[in-house]
Length: 89
Length: 233
Image (cartoon, rainbow over all chains, first blue to last red; front, side):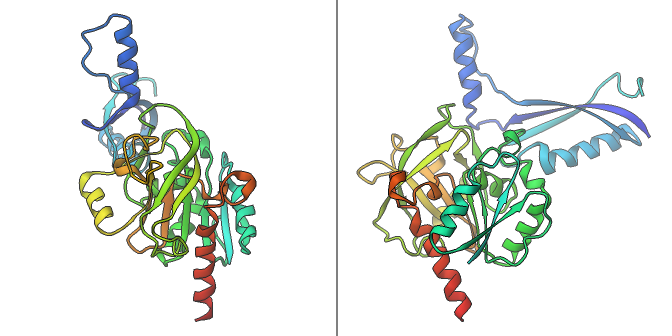
């Protein structure tokens, strides 16, 4: 069992209206960043957990995303094992 | 009619619901989110508010509360469950109703009175409403933009499970009368079995003249009638 760190990104599904992203886009355009085509706003979660292996940690996180962290109707998620994971443990 | 009203940390319409159930002659009782049993009740109501500070997604963390297991079981046995505002968000998060409630397309918290059509008056929650009746009720939310995929929306429409729609003064559901960007102007829906209903407008805030509308009363009376009738059988 070692301590691992994961980064989980939860983002609104493509094609789904993201009014917050649109508002930020218009804010950036007001600052003359006129070449912006799209802004999407999601969530970043940093999770530290004890797991038998990196795969075990990812499996756990996948279950967390499916059950709570992401809404399956509107959001997609990505899980990444952080590189320094396990060194500090 | 004994009604369990569930209070979560951050609920703020629980007392309104309590008063409202009393007003129609029912017998309300509070249940705390940490309770694991509902006790013997005839209906469950999930109030509006900002449970758990709307963290993660509105209603998401509330659905992990111990009491929600009991609510799911109650609903599974056909018990009537009504979710208003944050309660509707919880019902979607708990998969008791399809779809999700996204941020209002205006990005603003929207607090005002809206006009609603009654789309289906043959349910336990709406049987006292005449089909042509137009209702006035307040809304007060930032995440009330009902979203579901095309297939789910088509199914809701086909099966008559859209309960209320936002309409203009002429009675038409238009973009202008849609306060939050909801698909098909949907303000409330019901499950396939007809015992779980969620809605963003607040019927419990439209039950006395001093509140500006009494159009919410018949919803609670419908449920009370249904429960009284089913007890006589």
